[in-house]
Amino acid sequence: MEVTINVKLVNSKFNQAYADKENEGEETEDNIKYLWEDEFEVQGNVTNFKVINNTTYLLNGLYPNDDEFSFEIPDMTVLECTLDSGVITLLPFSKKAINKTEKKETKNGFTFYVQLKSIREVVNPMTGVYILKDDYPKELLALYVDEEE
Image (cartoon, rainbow, N blue to C red; front, side, top):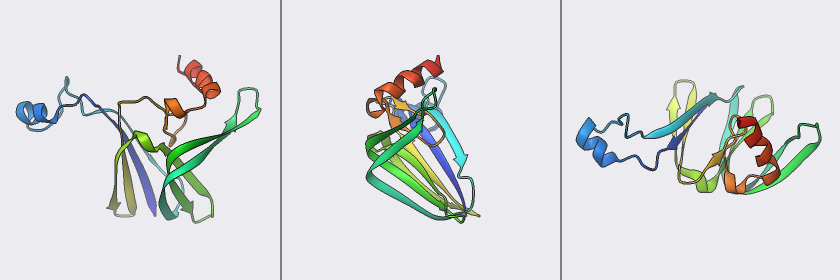
């Protein structure tokens, strides 16, 4: 099945009452509901999808000098997608950053919606990874900040 992931960062300053009164419930230029949105498809045919709450995610990768790193990130919600090839794709979210989730069926699968709170900064070092800045490894954060500038 096809699985699409839709992630939105909710603007904590959005005022629904103002939107209802002034613009038929819709956002306006000065009252924006979402600060940003990511949407991507899980590559491959997903045969099993599950949400794992309250888990630890192992963030693995390479430093710029090609040395390997591995950090345990606690308090995560991980979306686990098993493909028909047996490959497992993990999409981690800091549990404290999630405002709400919703799954909607589509013609060939489903879309999984994740709304994130904007009250704390989220680091998004690669597609499908959303970790609170406070929980992100400090030595990697320095690299990530350098890349952003």
